[in-house]
Length: 325
Image (cartoon, rainbow, N blue to C red; front, top):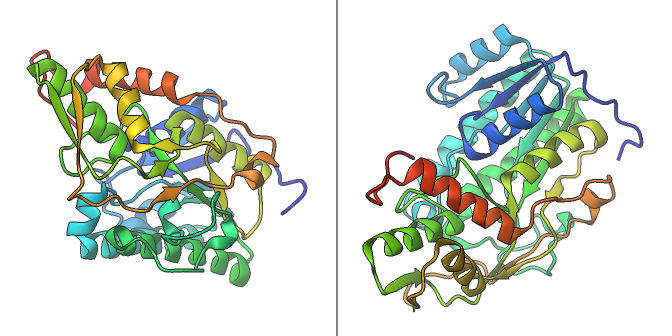
């Protein structure tokens, strides 16, 4: 790791790909709060990043000094399992096109957001960055994981072949304002928030949750993730990816109870054990991140309560139905 990476120029143009998404919008907020005066965001409504020419034209016209790649096709376990071709192809195209365009535009500093699902299904816990490519992947999201692994290798390759100071980060499960609460495309925490909220509104006495409740997961608030990303751009320069997490996990059963309490649901929680659990445990070793001087600030109970309030105010209408996602 470079001992003294140069801090980013706050007047330089920073391009955030995927700026309307959960992570991208938080990164934009963080950059502006830190005094960056030229932050450009692009999302699918502006530019189709699966189109190589459109991506090249956009990036080369902006000539950013820094690119943060938060653009991806994402979804929960059901969507990943049902649409592996789309998750593989779209993410490979987005990454390939954006990296090629950034290189053509002379971008020396780029941060690629991968995912903790790149690690093997069965691996020592907490998971160190060195576990990458040491075992078989979780079958339900292997296509998405392969695409993200390709992004990590691409970043390393641009560093080795062209001397670019590009870095990769591997966040754990992310949640917070701006998340996706779609019935079939959301991840576990927003899915639980939606389900329990609707149960309270409808007066239901039972909520059915997928799996056994025994898998353990780690969660990071999106504002903490955004803070970690900007911190690493200032303080980290190495081909090895960096895990971003909080260093603590809990069972899905405990998470469901936490969400139910935050929403105000007092009924029964029933487990549909015919549904898949996914990886038994996924806790990241965050020692490399902590060594750079960064620490998370938002605890899970506090973050879940804030996200529940955001969901109730922003996504769910007064009749309990979704207004928008």
